[in-house]
Image (tube, rainbow, N blue to C red):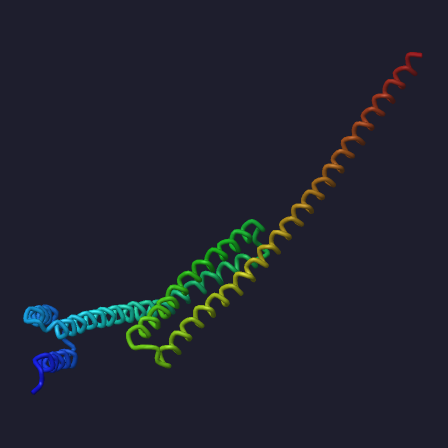
Length: 231
């Protein structure tokens, strides 16, 4: 005849299978069963019930977290395209101001600096969504295991984050190149202005000098004429 332990274990296995199949966590009920089994000396069976309850709770919590993360990602993805287009529009407007040679160098440099700040903000916003995808892929691996599909999803999410950073880095390089060009243009313009001012000052000084010389000459001529009359 089967022992009491084997009979109880058989019953426990059936209960666990039934609860697992239904997908229902009867934590309170399982605690009662575990305590009852321990009280009558079936410690192994009680431990099996406890292990099942713990693993079920963990799986349930992980599943809830996965669903929550999926909802967060879906919400972020709905807004991501709109956000990206808004950033592109703002960036293009700033580029137009920066490249408009009819505007002052100060205005153009200011627009280019604003573009740099905008690109950093865009990187942050787009990276948030990519990082959500990475976190979700890792959670799926935690819940469902390291399947080929899950590992591929993680690799795709990580690649997307790298692509975002490379794309924005290229735009930032262009922005920095233009900033250096504008600063050089500003320095050259300042030199030209200083040179023209110096030339203008020299002309004014020459005119003033010539005028003074003419006045002196006129006074000398007048004095000579007076002297000639008196003598």
